[in-house]
Image 1 (cartoon, rainbow, N blue to C red):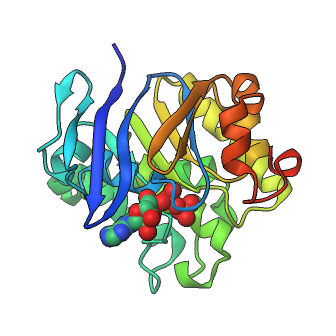
Image 2: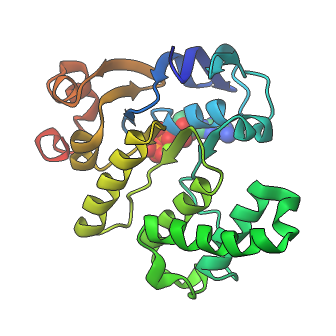
Length: 250
Ligand SMILES: Nc1ncnc2c1ncn2[C@@H]1O[C@H](COP(=O)(O)OP(=O)(O)OP(=O)(O)O)[C@@H](O)[C@H]1O
Ligand SMILES: [Mg+2]
């Protein structure tokens, strides 16, 4: 059984068909890429999966249950975690406080108990360490570089211990060394049994970390396959032509 099934989803905004009968899956223990040129419908798919956008038609199933009409917070509670293409952290709080707030939201009233407070701090440190942000703990969230802020989003998301991670352009703003470390982290998260579904424009990263890739163009899934299959797929190469030099981006 797939962790996530997107089944024949259509999203129309007036005359624009943003998602056009898209079907794809994501599984536990795997890193799945969702790629496509600008405007292909990737973020809209994420909005449908996470519950921010109701589809015009089609279904979303998560952990075996139809969640098409389930509110965002209930999907989150069931184990869906998401980061955004636009950053969502609390800018005036420190990096550590942002993670602390996420840990508290997840653990609710138990956060008021003293023994928990100690383990909470250990948890905050572990999350910061995990995404490589321990050095930035005391910086204000709005003062750190964009790429780093994306890692903060990921730490906040991991605070809820999600079974499925939806990551929208998580590596943009990271340098080469940071991107390599980030790729290794994605593999680790999958090895723990989580499913990772990632929208990403960095083809080198996508090709090196994904187990499977779904390519979208004009809202349609034009190809599904391994990185090697996607790289050689004629429809995918056509979709990227004009966008940039295909040899260079893939
Ligand atoms: N709320 C909205 N109202 C109207 N049109 C929208 C809305 N959201 C998205 N669209 C349109 O739907 C299409 C798909 O947009 P979407 O943001 O899903 O693409 P994307 O693949 O995430 O692109 P990018 O790579 O630039 O982030 C685009 O034509 C976009 O202009
Ligand atoms: Mg997008």
